[in-house]
Length: 179
Image (tube, rainbow, N blue to C red; front, side):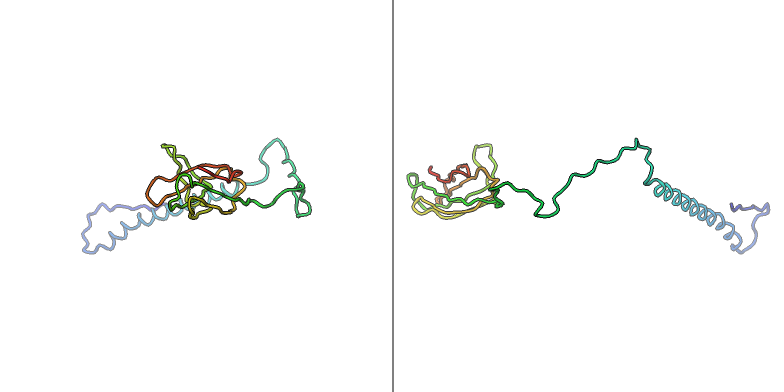
């Protein structure tokens, strides 16, 4: 279904352009129709390929998947060893004594996460602070909870006179700290 245009051997002498316009529009409309038809055929072919290639068969070796292992479906199906503690945090008592270094006004912070700087000091992760408080005459005593997974903590003591803080990494098992 292709539109063609026939040319006249006579030159156009009419003052009206309607005939000429109609002849010029005919090929454009024909091209548009062909493009639409080609697009429609491409769309149908793509759809057929996409939906035609699914499921079934596969030509494999005929192996089947292994059955899934049994999973406990109720709390009564679970087995837990005797003495297992479900609590993910531990209670700690922290005792700090720096009275032989200073009894000046100072402040302590305890962090569960930190990184080591190139100058061998530590940079605390401020979002992991577990405890903070003021020292009284160089001493501090308090209780706090920390996740069981934290093996070491960073203790940092700041002085109000501008000197660098005291920092010490301690095991979460040992909470008696003396500088």
